Amino acid sequence: MRVLIIGGGGREHALAWKIAQSPMLTKLYIAPGNPGTGQLGENVPIAATDITGLAVFAQAQKIDLVVPGPEIPLALGIADALAAAGIACFGPTQAAAQLEASKQFTKHICDGAKIPTAAWAGFTDATAARAYLATHPAPIVIKADGLAAGKGVVVAQTNAEADAAITAMLEDNIHGSSGASIVIEECLTGTEISLFAICDGDTAVFCGTAMDHKRVGESDTGPNTGGMGAIAPPPAATPTIIDTAMATIIRPALAAMTARGTPFRGVLFAGLMLTATGPKLIEFNARFGDPECETLMPLLATDLLPLLAEAATGRLNPATSLIWHSDSAATVILAARGYPGAYEKSAPIDLKGVKASPDTQIFHAGTTYDGKTLRSHGGRVLAITATGPTLRHAIHRAYRAVEAIAFPGGFYRHDIGARALLTSEGEGIDRSVQ
Ligand code: AMP
Ligand code: GLY
Image (cartoon, rainbow, N blue to C red; front, side, top):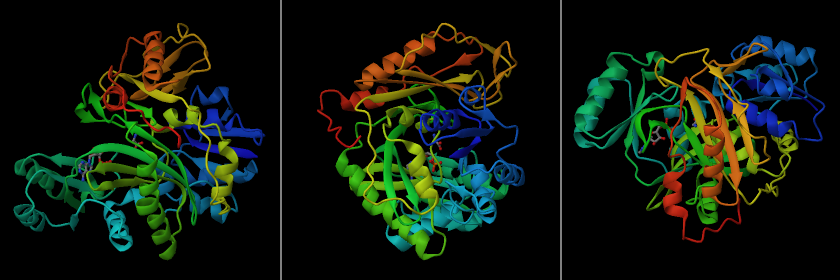
């Protein structure tokens, strides 16, 4: 198969790393890719937002399967453009990608399919939103309807914070048209995990769970980021929780999307809150998580490529069950100082101190290479993943590699996985599913 991966971050490097191991692969392109993906396939200088350029390239190069990594090309309709050109795409159409691109859309799907989620109401008018607050006091969650690069959610602990979020989104338009419509929803409590399913429109195959670390600071403080690290599998993701989430959230959502004429193909990523009354949906994403993907790929024993091809062409076998290594994995993000605010670019990075080992992968997220020096280029710069027989081993190995990297312009969280370790040790976790 001739494959084109779209994107240039850590998630796409991890996908390229896994797909490059497939015996079915004959040629791998990554657009635009990064110095890490360039070692596994051929990078092509086409932006992930250049839908026409990507479709023309895929046709000219007789690509058999396109795998979009980020949400942006999906929201811009890459799957539709490729379908028109007769090229298989492992990702949803623009209409199906609304499960990520519009929170109100997803809430309506949840209501129609009786999917457990936080109680909610939608608003475009600030006065009406404030009136709702009078009967639904804080803690309460205010969300911009559209894509807002992870910055569109305010978990308000006080009514004043909720009021300020309504003003910012509906009156000051801080998120532009993405925040012109908002969702106000019940604040859920519990352990938060991410669950992934590979979908072909009708069939969903469970594809792992992970736990992200979204805040920039230790002990989950400071502003939200794309994710500062992840572990997998989370100790809380028991087989019962997974079965319940697949049966009450993933499969009903897939059926509802098909019923309305917009079947969902690709990765359905459910952000779940494990509440006292069972798993509830926080949000859907229409793609793999980043850095969750970097954490999951080294744990996956099954060849990913045929599965993605089957899903893209509506041929997934419902009996498919992925095989996982029995290890745990941890990913630590090395970020550029200042991230998620303004950050320095072009700081040199030296990886020579890291010993090559099968249990540790350095995935490139925001780097450039000029033939001599590797330099930082994005906010999240490297995603260091290690596996080990226990979560504690995996975390230890990941940090050993992080400490061996010379990157004076960078920083990282020192407590990735600490929360999961607190709940896992001494509890005899059943790991039979992953
Ligand atoms: P989202 O962008 O929807 O993933 O939201 C960002 C973060 O806000 C989530 O990862 C949760 O930690 C938190 N969050 C979102 N919705 C809720 C909710 N209804 N209750 C509690 N926390 C929430
Ligand atoms: N790490 C969270 C996300 O990819 O949305």
